[in-house]
Image (cartoon, rainbow, N blue to C red; front, side, top):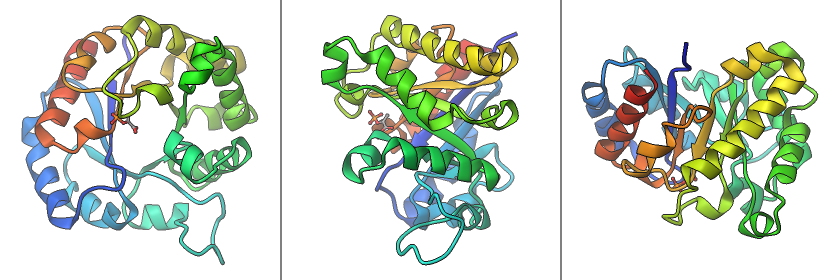
Length: 255
Ligand code: PEP
């Protein structure tokens, strides 16, 4: 038995209403029939239009961030309830751009993961080391620390809601994806962490996605690795043809 491929497009701060509808209208007929999940992580302004446009299709819509608070005086923030009210089913949490540019620390990321689970959104927890950390041989230590802080205190049931995305910071938007061997090694460390904390069932079921310069070429070998269950795709998810190719290659390889 294998895990179905999960591919999530991260549109970041791109796309407008018409482009969103055009993309979502085109995508379903381009997808292969093999099993797998296809998700789009869209800007908050597009949640409603994207979820309306994808109604009746297999496309799942989610956000790129969520507040750690339930509601109230937090200007500029978006809550789990608001995301769900607009049709969102999941949220990215702890993307390296949020850690870097908006100073999200491990404590805040932990609170967001917990808030998402409480609010019924699947958290897509992003972890990854910087170039400097990689060069000084700290990859495993950094990742285990990020995982322990963000999700270590969840119980087995809560932890089973989490999707993990391994996104080496040095590979994001650089055109240099991790080699399949390096990514596999890290994914197996992540799965080992889940196994040790919550047992084999959670370890087997948790989707662990690779992110960082995934495109229709780089996905081919990455997705053959046993612990790589799919991809979080930035730049290449803005074009419906390249995104559909990534989804199809992932599905066909895993099924
Ligand atoms: C990302 O930012 O989540 C990402 C993976 O970006 P890219 O695919 O453009 O490297």
